[in-house]
Image 1 (spheres, one colour):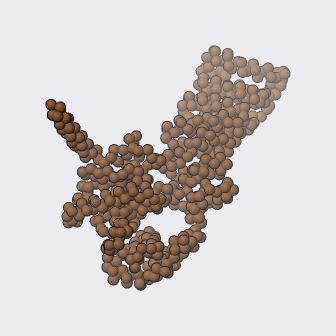
Image 2 (image 1 turned 135 degrees about the horizontal axis):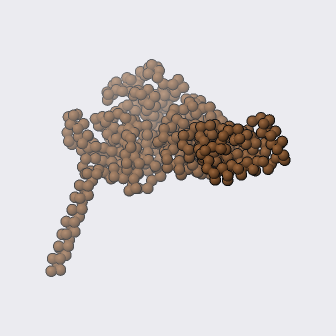
Image 3 (image 1 turned 120 degrees about the vertical axis):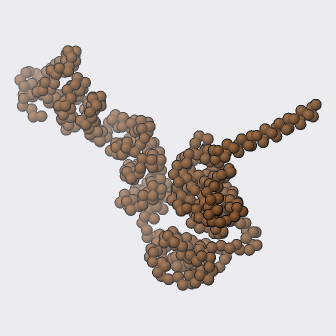
Length: 549
């Protein structure tokens, strides 16, 4: 009986495992590969891999996704049904499709194993279902956007396997055709000679030839040696390269490219020689980008001199270069309190060209610590550019970060900060149609009086006159009286009488909107305080009728 129970238990365990696997497979077929469950796909940023079969999407991780340092990542997605349709139209067999899928699986597996700064970093390994394959890598951008082409056998890196990360680094991401060294000794596979040297030898000189072909392809937007697998055509094209072929290449780069594409390997420059080309050395924008890459290593004096030059140069950069190469190091340098007043204006100026989503993703995270701790000149800059930040930040960030910054600026004792805040308060009082906003703006003006000079107080008086000309409600009149009282306490008789003249020369004090309590408690009290300041009634009349407003 014990044996029967044991056998029954094992049978039930096997059945349970089969059911669980079936359920899991069914769920995956419905929901798709694991990356599609862990990430929200955003925009398609391009295509890549052999035949441009992978569709690459920018993606935001969900709560179920593994922890990564990236706010956005790149999801590689392959739809097997679309691949089958392409295969059918091309007249290829099912075995060719299976071989191509095996190639992609091998490519993904090698990407996981290869840990190198020059190789695309895999965040989540390949997951496959009946209808799709997907994996997740570090964020990429500026990729090829062509439609998938018919898969072709090629053992060489080409534009389909070269990717640019969100930080601007160039990386390899295609190793489906890679073989080990002992396999390579068995023979040479057939390959397209678009980017391969004449002599099929492994070495740095052959790499420089391939790099030259790649550089030409990127600049000219067409391959230099497009010979359709014809070896004779390839040799003729290489032997008789005309100057016309290099007419689309910048003059400073022509000589270096011609050396790199030399038939003799010994005539080709080294990688170090190529980076020392005048094309790179004399380009001030490239030198600026190199400085930015190592900006954190420089001292403050070097940074100051560089930023002075960059203030006139940044307009020459492409918007993508500004977004991915200029802005990140500048935002990182905002942690340097000494350099903040110089860097912040440039960051905010570049931010003007960003849309709201890009600003919140790339610039605002670096500004949040500055918003919470800024003082002095930095706080003044933020107040002056408050409208830019308000227009581009979400409601959540406005409440959490921007509004507290404005409140701190309002309470700051620096006169320059007060002068930056004051016009906005004047504008609120004069332009709004909401009574509550006008009342609060007038209350702010009353609080600002103690920190203002005399011209600033006169501006407030003019604002009071304009406000009461269109709004004689009780709250507005009481706030006007409160501001006049603040003027009296801060500057004494001179400015108080100006306010008194304004109030007495109009029917504001006897407006019907004021009830008896408001008139007795506030208006009469204020007038009594004013009258006590005068030694006699003659002085009062002199101030009222002869002192210019």
